[in-house]
Image (cartoon, rainbow, N blue to C red; front, side, top):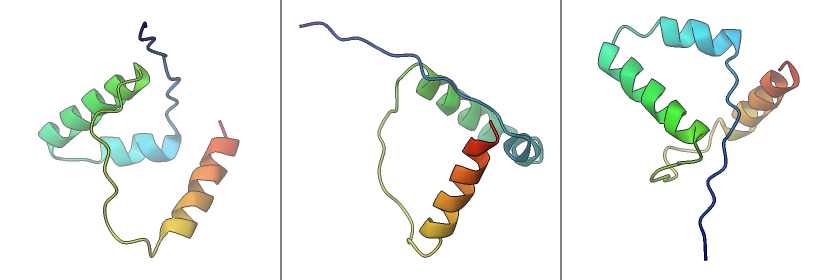
Length: 70
């Protein structure tokens, strides 16, 4: 049985770019960039749920809005 890895198309929004460029912690920028590159190659790593869900609905709506603009 073979394992097929799929490429994921990652698109950068202006909002993300502004946030990322505003990060002052170079180590954090490197780790985030590396994680995004791994995801683009289909490697999601060790994904765990975290945090509370108080903003989930708003976050999902914002993500959908951003996706429509791509």
